[in-house]
Length: 102
Image (cartoon, rainbow, N blue to C red; front, side, top):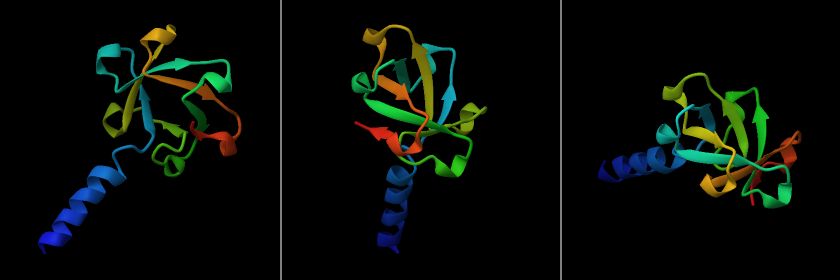
């Protein structure tokens, strides 16, 4: 019983913690990630593909599903126009196969 409880807790903590259902916030102070969008794939930390399907959003896959509700988001992001302010640089792609961390 104790082992089952520990396993369940680990699955909840690690399995769902980094899914990429994303909410865009207007406030830097409430953001989990401060994002700078680069024009060049080579400058990015992550290549992002935007999907219309919540089920496609997976942990650090680079496939993002935009949610309208802050409470259902795994990441709250704030977009900055200054590269030095960002803790994640992303490049948006049209191709799902290119998505992912670099």
